Image 1 (cartoon, rainbow, N blue to C red):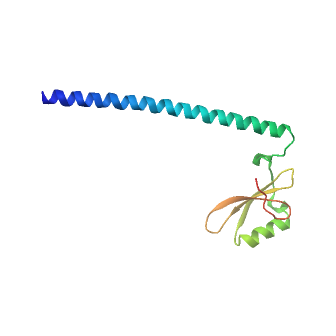
Image 2: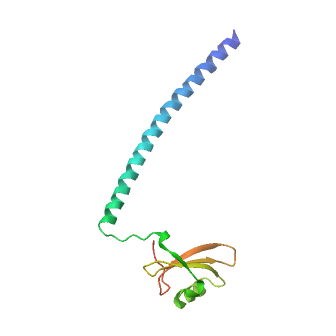
Length: 123
């Protein structure tokens, strides 16, 4: 009789857990739908802004160039601010901005986006 009682308690506990899980799943689905709607609205606003002529620069607009083609102002800025850094590659976009891939002595690497005068460009 004791085993039957314990089995019944465990069965009820399991059913309660599954009921709570179903409610949580519904809440997650509602939240996901709201987030998706917000993302759709934001994308529509972005398309409207682009249609109105606001300038947006994508990182994919850069085309590869030789490291030697990078202006002296850019290379001197890198040498000044990142001593011992190695320039691994470079690219340029139509706006005259340079994307320079740099490796530091400690093994870290990254990309800098600079204008022709060596000033950082915000993306």
